[in-house]
Image (cartoon, rainbow, N blue to C red; front, side):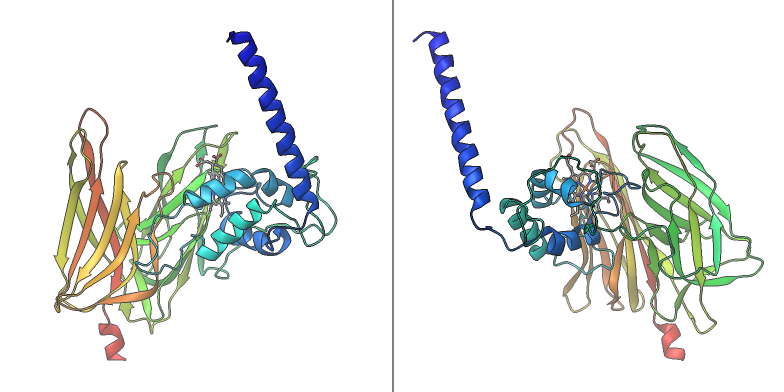
Amino acid sequence: MLPVNSSIKAGAIAAAICAFGLLAGMALAHETLTTTVLFDREIVRILSKHCVMCHDQGGPSFPLDTYEQTFLQRRKIRAEIIARHMPPWAAVPGYGQFANDNSLTLQETQFIVSWVEGLGPRNSGTVFTNVAGADAARPNEIRAHADAGHWLLGMPDLARQLPANTIEPRAPDQVKRVVVDLGLTSERRVRAVEFMPGDRRVVHAAFFTVEETGEWIGSWTPWYGVMTLPKGVAYRLPAGAHVVAEINYRGAQERAVDRGTLGLFFAGSSSSNTASDLVLDAKGAVPAGAQSQRFHAEQRLAEDTYAAALRPELLPGANSVEVSARRPDGGTQVLLFAKDVPADWPSPYILREPVVILKGSILAVTAYYSNSAKTSKPGGFRVTMTKYSNAGFDRK
Ligand code: HEC
């Protein structure tokens, strides 16, 4: 057969398939809806809860507030949530419960898949297919709403603006470190820490430590901006304390000047229990071609210990990290198991309820790395656990 002929034939078949596809699509659109999930009802709630802290005008990614924006992105949305790329969250469900867990529930995932496959209806009225003028607002339009730009825990007892960082257009991922003097003339106790970034388009995460003690006291990610200790527990800040902020940035389309504000909430004198850090770390090389190079560190706990939060710091190439406690009775308690940790969204894991680890248990961290490169590269971890003992409670 001549090549010319075959290409004509292929073209005709393609046209036929195309026409059939169009007809099938139209027929479907005029038939009954194949989903009961509606944008104005289920989808908008999911977007508000899990997506628009990043996907809106002032955030780091394209907006997903309106029906039209979401409808246009529906296939990508389905692919991203099925692959668990979006929203970024690496903890595997079933191991520990976290206050800052932003992952979709199985039902939320099913709602989105059903909505996308059912032609993405807006409300019970019609199937909306006219996406012209995607940015035009409509009267009484239902949109997803981002909750940003105000203190979530109320007015802080002390607020300090951080020095400014300038982030160039499209700058790659980078961490900037700034220090702020809290101006404390006497020791204070802090029960909660909140952060408000200056420009949410460029801030991916922020971590705060006390310069004088090295202690980790709080963090911020687009989906969770506070650290609150359980009642009766507080961080200790010495007089003259400075806070070091490590801020993870990625450049936006335009130059951004970010100047965030740190808010501290003081504890009363009844908070006799002091939170402090327990750090486990391991370092080493990941040989070229390694598939699962193991790094491990452990420590026996000399007293009953309450874990409130975990901050794993990993290097590129980490496949997984597990934090667990081996109890004296032989049982194992997994505090965190995270896989495919996204390097561009560092996150703490704030336990929903503090977890008690019995005296004599061995706290262990294990991480696995792979390295597809031809040369060896560094691997390892540093895991910081915010913990306290219950000694303070017993005295009351
Ligand atoms: C922590 C911030 C954040 C959250 C939360 C988040 N996203 Fe994203 N998303 C991004 C960024 C930033 C990008 C741009 C791509 C990149 O750099 O990873 C993106 C990209 C995407 C893409 C496009 C991927 C592509 O191939 O172009 C889709 C679709 C998406 N997000 C959907 C969602 C949905 C749906 C949710 C909520 C269920 C969500 N995202 C939650 C930050 C976020």
